[in-house]
Length: 321
Image (tube, rainbow, N blue to C red; front, top):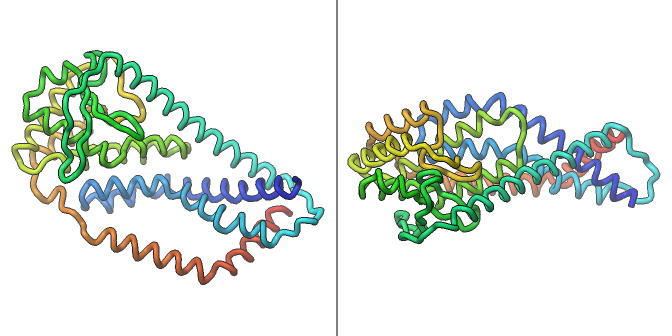
Protein backbone atom coordinates (compact mmCIF):
# COMPACT_ATOMS: atom_id res chain seq x y z
CA UNK A 1 0.00 0.00 0.00
CA UNK A 2 2.82 2.42 0.89
CA UNK A 3 4.57 1.54 -2.36
CA UNK A 4 1.42 2.27 -4.36
CA UNK A 5 0.79 5.59 -2.59
CA UNK A 6 4.40 6.64 -3.15
CA UNK A 7 4.13 5.73 -6.83
CA UNK A 8 0.89 7.68 -7.27
CA UNK A 9 2.30 10.79 -5.59
CA UNK A 10 5.57 10.71 -7.52
CA UNK A 11 3.85 10.08 -10.88
CA UNK A 12 1.34 12.82 -10.15
CA UNK A 13 4.22 15.16 -9.26
CA UNK A 14 5.89 14.54 -12.62
CA UNK A 15 2.57 15.15 -14.38
CA UNK A 16 1.76 18.43 -12.65
CA UNK A 17 5.26 19.86 -13.10
CA UNK A 18 5.28 19.09 -16.83
CA UNK A 19 1.68 20.16 -17.34
CA UNK A 20 2.08 23.53 -15.62
CA UNK A 21 5.45 24.28 -17.25
CA UNK A 22 4.18 23.45 -20.73
CA UNK A 23 0.90 25.33 -20.16
CA UNK A 24 2.76 28.49 -19.16
CA UNK A 25 4.98 28.11 -22.23
CA UNK A 26 1.97 27.71 -24.53
CA UNK A 27 0.26 30.73 -22.93
CA UNK A 28 3.29 32.87 -23.76
CA UNK A 29 4.05 31.54 -27.24
CA UNK A 30 0.77 30.61 -28.92
CA UNK A 31 0.28 34.06 -30.51
CA UNK A 32 3.57 33.75 -32.40
CA UNK A 33 2.57 30.37 -33.77
CA UNK A 34 -0.88 31.75 -34.60
CA UNK A 35 0.58 34.64 -36.61
CA UNK A 36 2.81 32.25 -38.55
CA UNK A 37 -0.19 30.01 -39.33
CA UNK A 38 -2.48 32.81 -40.51
CA UNK A 39 -1.21 32.52 -44.09
CA UNK A 40 -2.43 28.92 -44.23
CA UNK A 41 -6.04 27.82 -44.68
CA UNK A 42 -8.31 28.35 -41.71
CA UNK A 43 -8.90 24.65 -41.09
CA UNK A 44 -5.21 24.02 -40.60
CA UNK A 45 -4.89 27.10 -38.42
CA UNK A 46 -7.78 25.91 -36.21
CA UNK A 47 -6.27 22.43 -35.96
CA UNK A 48 -2.91 23.93 -35.02
CA UNK A 49 -4.46 26.03 -32.26
CA UNK A 50 -6.31 23.01 -30.90
CA UNK A 51 -3.10 20.96 -30.97
CA UNK A 52 -1.31 23.70 -29.04
CA UNK A 53 -4.13 23.78 -26.50
CA UNK A 54 -3.89 20.03 -25.97
CA UNK A 55 -0.08 19.85 -26.08
CA UNK A 56 0.59 20.33 -22.32
CA UNK A 57 -1.90 17.68 -21.24
CA UNK A 58 -0.88 15.24 -23.97
CA UNK A 59 2.87 15.51 -23.36
CA UNK A 60 2.51 15.43 -19.58
CA UNK A 61 0.24 12.37 -19.74
CA UNK A 62 2.52 10.56 -22.20
CA UNK A 63 5.66 11.16 -20.14
CA UNK A 64 3.88 10.16 -16.94
CA UNK A 65 2.34 6.90 -18.15
CA UNK A 66 4.98 5.86 -20.69
CA UNK A 67 8.13 6.77 -18.75
CA UNK A 68 7.51 7.81 -15.13
CA UNK A 69 5.17 5.00 -14.08
CA UNK A 70 7.21 2.16 -15.70
CA UNK A 71 10.41 3.67 -14.29
CA UNK A 72 8.98 3.59 -10.79
CA UNK A 73 7.56 0.08 -11.11
CA UNK A 74 10.73 -1.42 -12.59
CA UNK A 75 13.50 0.40 -10.75
CA UNK A 76 12.06 1.39 -7.38
CA UNK A 77 12.68 -1.23 -4.64
CA UNK A 78 9.37 -2.39 -3.20
CA UNK A 79 10.79 -3.29 0.19
CA UNK A 80 12.50 0.04 0.71
CA UNK A 81 11.68 2.20 3.71
CA UNK A 82 12.27 5.49 1.91
CA UNK A 83 9.90 8.16 3.13
CA UNK A 84 8.05 10.64 0.92
CA UNK A 85 9.24 14.22 1.32
CA UNK A 86 6.98 17.25 1.50
CA UNK A 87 7.68 18.41 -2.07
CA UNK A 88 6.44 15.29 -3.93
CA UNK A 89 3.52 15.06 -1.50
CA UNK A 90 2.41 18.64 -2.22
CA UNK A 91 2.99 18.36 -5.96
CA UNK A 92 1.28 14.97 -6.11
CA UNK A 93 -1.79 16.26 -4.30
CA UNK A 94 -1.86 19.31 -6.61
CA UNK A 95 -1.80 16.98 -9.62
CA UNK A 96 -4.66 14.90 -8.23
CA UNK A 97 -6.70 18.04 -7.47
CA UNK A 98 -5.99 19.35 -10.99
CA UNK A 99 -7.29 16.14 -12.56
CA UNK A 100 -10.39 16.10 -10.34
CA UNK A 101 -11.07 19.76 -11.17
CA UNK A 102 -10.82 19.08 -14.90
CA UNK A 103 -13.13 16.06 -14.68
CA UNK A 104 -15.60 18.16 -12.69
CA UNK A 105 -15.54 20.96 -15.30
CA UNK A 106 -16.12 18.53 -18.16
CA UNK A 107 -18.85 16.66 -16.29
CA UNK A 108 -20.72 19.85 -15.38
CA UNK A 109 -20.50 21.13 -18.96
CA UNK A 110 -21.80 17.81 -20.28
CA UNK A 111 -24.69 17.78 -17.78
CA UNK A 112 -25.67 21.35 -18.65
CA UNK A 113 -25.60 20.51 -22.35
CA UNK A 114 -27.72 17.40 -21.76
CA UNK A 115 -30.34 19.36 -19.80
CA UNK A 116 -30.40 22.04 -22.49
CA UNK A 117 -30.95 19.50 -25.27
CA UNK A 118 -33.67 17.82 -23.23
CA UNK A 119 -35.53 21.14 -23.02
CA UNK A 120 -35.10 21.80 -26.72
CA UNK A 121 -36.35 18.33 -27.60
CA UNK A 122 -39.73 18.91 -25.95
CA UNK A 123 -40.93 21.03 -28.89
CA UNK A 124 -38.62 19.75 -31.62
CA UNK A 125 -39.66 18.30 -34.95
CA UNK A 126 -37.47 16.61 -37.54
CA UNK A 127 -37.00 18.65 -40.73
CA UNK A 128 -34.43 16.99 -42.94
CA UNK A 129 -30.94 15.62 -43.19
CA UNK A 130 -28.33 18.19 -44.14
CA UNK A 131 -25.61 16.82 -46.44
CA UNK A 132 -21.93 17.30 -45.78
CA UNK A 133 -20.04 17.21 -49.06
CA UNK A 134 -18.87 13.62 -49.63
CA UNK A 135 -19.91 12.71 -46.06
CA UNK A 136 -22.96 11.27 -44.35
CA UNK A 137 -26.02 13.40 -43.55
CA UNK A 138 -26.71 15.27 -40.31
CA UNK A 139 -30.16 15.47 -38.73
CA UNK A 140 -31.76 18.93 -38.60
CA UNK A 141 -34.44 19.62 -35.98
CA UNK A 142 -36.79 22.59 -35.75
CA UNK A 143 -37.39 23.81 -32.22
CA UNK A 144 -39.12 26.70 -30.41
CA UNK A 145 -38.27 30.33 -31.02
CA UNK A 146 -36.63 31.02 -27.63
CA UNK A 147 -33.43 29.10 -28.44
CA UNK A 148 -30.31 30.17 -30.38
CA UNK A 149 -31.22 30.62 -34.07
CA UNK A 150 -28.97 27.93 -35.57
CA UNK A 151 -26.77 25.66 -33.49
CA UNK A 152 -24.89 22.38 -33.71
CA UNK A 153 -25.37 20.67 -30.34
CA UNK A 154 -24.61 17.26 -28.89
CA UNK A 155 -21.35 15.48 -28.13
CA UNK A 156 -21.45 11.90 -29.41
CA UNK A 157 -24.61 12.15 -31.55
CA UNK A 158 -24.62 15.82 -32.56
CA UNK A 159 -27.49 17.36 -34.47
CA UNK A 160 -28.31 20.78 -35.93
CA UNK A 161 -31.05 22.80 -34.23
CA UNK A 162 -32.96 25.46 -36.16
CA UNK A 163 -35.29 27.98 -34.53
CA UNK A 164 -38.49 29.11 -36.18
CA UNK A 165 -37.23 32.70 -36.18
CA UNK A 166 -34.11 31.71 -38.15
CA UNK A 167 -36.18 29.68 -40.59
CA UNK A 168 -38.44 32.68 -41.11
CA UNK A 169 -35.73 35.29 -41.84
CA UNK A 170 -33.53 33.14 -44.11
CA UNK A 171 -34.38 32.33 -47.71
CA UNK A 172 -33.80 28.84 -49.09
CA UNK A 173 -30.25 29.40 -50.36
CA UNK A 174 -29.15 31.17 -47.19
CA UNK A 175 -30.63 28.41 -45.07
CA UNK A 176 -28.88 25.67 -47.03
CA UNK A 177 -25.46 27.27 -46.77
CA UNK A 178 -26.01 27.97 -43.07
CA UNK A 179 -27.00 24.33 -42.50
CA UNK A 180 -23.87 23.17 -44.32
CA UNK A 181 -21.81 25.41 -42.03
CA UNK A 182 -23.27 23.76 -38.94
CA UNK A 183 -22.92 20.32 -40.53
CA UNK A 184 -19.19 20.95 -40.89
CA UNK A 185 -19.00 21.53 -37.12
CA UNK A 186 -20.70 18.17 -36.65
CA UNK A 187 -18.27 16.48 -39.03
CA UNK A 188 -15.23 17.95 -37.25
CA UNK A 189 -16.57 17.05 -33.79
CA UNK A 190 -16.06 20.63 -32.60
CA UNK A 191 -18.44 20.20 -29.65
CA UNK A 192 -16.36 17.27 -28.42
CA UNK A 193 -13.24 19.40 -28.75
CA UNK A 194 -14.83 22.12 -26.64
CA UNK A 195 -15.69 19.53 -23.99
CA UNK A 196 -12.10 18.25 -23.97
CA UNK A 197 -10.91 21.82 -23.42
CA UNK A 198 -13.05 21.95 -20.29
CA UNK A 199 -11.30 18.78 -19.13
CA UNK A 200 -7.85 20.39 -19.42
CA UNK A 201 -8.82 23.83 -18.10
CA UNK A 202 -5.86 26.02 -17.11
CA UNK A 203 -5.67 29.72 -16.16
CA UNK A 204 -4.60 32.04 -18.97
CA UNK A 205 -5.83 29.86 -21.86
CA UNK A 206 -8.92 31.95 -22.63
CA UNK A 207 -7.21 33.87 -25.41
CA UNK A 208 -6.05 30.70 -27.14
CA UNK A 209 -9.48 29.10 -26.85
CA UNK A 210 -11.16 32.23 -28.21
CA UNK A 211 -8.77 32.30 -31.18
CA UNK A 212 -9.52 28.62 -31.82
CA UNK A 213 -13.27 29.28 -31.84
CA UNK A 214 -12.87 32.15 -34.31
CA UNK A 215 -10.68 30.11 -36.67
CA UNK A 216 -13.04 27.15 -36.38
CA UNK A 217 -15.94 29.33 -37.48
CA UNK A 218 -13.96 30.62 -40.46
CA UNK A 219 -12.92 27.07 -41.35
CA UNK A 220 -16.58 26.01 -41.33
CA UNK A 221 -17.43 29.02 -43.50
CA UNK A 222 -14.84 27.98 -46.06
CA UNK A 223 -15.98 24.36 -46.09
CA UNK A 224 -19.65 25.31 -46.46
CA UNK A 225 -19.29 27.34 -49.65
CA UNK A 226 -17.91 26.47 -53.08
CA UNK A 227 -18.70 29.60 -55.08
CA UNK A 228 -18.92 33.35 -54.66
CA UNK A 229 -22.73 33.25 -54.69
CA UNK A 230 -22.81 30.68 -51.86
CA UNK A 231 -20.33 32.82 -49.90
CA UNK A 232 -22.64 35.81 -50.26
CA UNK A 233 -25.60 33.70 -49.15
CA UNK A 234 -23.72 32.61 -46.02
CA UNK A 235 -22.63 36.19 -45.31
CA UNK A 236 -26.27 37.28 -45.54
CA UNK A 237 -27.28 34.47 -43.17
CA UNK A 238 -24.62 35.51 -40.65
CA UNK A 239 -25.78 39.14 -40.79
CA UNK A 240 -29.46 38.25 -40.41
CA UNK A 241 -28.97 35.81 -37.55
CA UNK A 242 -26.64 38.22 -35.72
CA UNK A 243 -29.64 40.55 -35.42
CA UNK A 244 -31.82 37.93 -33.76
CA UNK A 245 -31.80 38.06 -29.98
CA UNK A 246 -32.15 34.68 -28.31
CA UNK A 247 -33.82 34.40 -24.91
CA UNK A 248 -31.68 31.35 -24.13
CA UNK A 249 -27.95 31.67 -24.92
CA UNK A 250 -26.05 28.92 -26.67
CA UNK A 251 -24.40 26.39 -24.37
CA UNK A 252 -20.68 26.29 -23.77
CA UNK A 253 -20.29 23.01 -25.71
CA UNK A 254 -22.35 24.03 -28.74
CA UNK A 255 -21.35 25.66 -32.03
CA UNK A 256 -23.83 28.37 -33.04
CA UNK A 257 -23.62 30.05 -36.43
CA UNK A 258 -23.40 33.43 -34.66
CA UNK A 259 -22.10 33.54 -31.11
CA UNK A 260 -18.82 35.45 -31.39
CA UNK A 261 -18.14 39.12 -30.60
CA UNK A 262 -19.17 41.70 -33.19
CA UNK A 263 -15.63 42.21 -34.51
CA UNK A 264 -15.29 38.49 -35.19
CA UNK A 265 -18.63 38.43 -37.04
CA UNK A 266 -17.52 41.42 -39.11
CA UNK A 267 -14.27 39.66 -40.00
CA UNK A 268 -16.19 36.56 -41.14
CA UNK A 269 -18.56 38.62 -43.26
CA UNK A 270 -15.68 40.48 -44.90
CA UNK A 271 -13.93 37.19 -45.73
CA UNK A 272 -17.09 35.76 -47.26
CA UNK A 273 -17.76 38.86 -49.35
CA UNK A 274 -14.21 38.68 -50.73
CA UNK A 275 -14.36 34.88 -51.10
CA UNK A 276 -12.07 33.11 -53.55
CA UNK A 277 -11.25 29.48 -54.22
CA UNK A 278 -7.94 29.64 -52.41
CA UNK A 279 -9.65 29.76 -49.01
CA UNK A 280 -10.09 26.01 -48.78
CA UNK A 281 -7.36 24.33 -50.79
CA UNK A 282 -6.75 20.89 -49.28
CA UNK A 283 -3.25 19.91 -48.22
CA UNK A 284 -2.60 16.37 -49.38
CA UNK A 285 0.76 16.12 -47.66
CA UNK A 286 -0.27 16.94 -44.08
CA UNK A 287 -1.24 13.35 -43.26
CA UNK A 288 2.07 12.06 -44.63
CA UNK A 289 4.01 14.59 -42.56
CA UNK A 290 2.09 13.62 -39.44
CA UNK A 291 2.65 9.92 -40.10
CA UNK A 292 6.38 10.43 -40.63
CA UNK A 293 6.67 12.51 -37.46
CA UNK A 294 4.85 9.82 -35.47
CA UNK A 295 7.12 7.11 -36.89
CA UNK A 296 10.23 9.10 -35.98
CA UNK A 297 8.92 9.71 -32.46
CA UNK A 298 8.09 6.04 -31.87
CA UNK A 299 11.48 4.90 -33.25
CA UNK A 300 13.35 7.39 -31.08
CA UNK A 301 11.41 6.30 -28.01
CA UNK A 302 12.11 2.62 -28.69
CA UNK A 303 15.85 3.20 -29.10
CA UNK A 304 16.26 5.39 -26.01
CA UNK A 305 13.59 3.84 -23.76
CA UNK A 306 15.96 2.10 -21.34
CA UNK A 307 18.05 5.23 -20.94
CA UNK A 308 14.91 7.32 -20.38
CA UNK A 309 13.72 4.97 -17.64
CA UNK A 310 17.04 5.25 -15.79
CA UNK A 311 17.13 9.03 -16.10
CA UNK A 312 13.51 9.37 -15.01
CA UNK A 313 14.22 7.22 -11.95
CA UNK A 314 17.14 9.52 -11.10
CA UNK A 315 14.81 12.52 -11.39
CA UNK A 316 12.22 10.95 -9.11
CA UNK A 317 14.92 10.06 -6.57
CA UNK A 318 16.05 13.68 -6.56
CA UNK A 319 12.45 14.80 -6.20
CA UNK A 320 11.87 12.56 -3.21
CA UNK A 321 14.91 13.93 -1.42
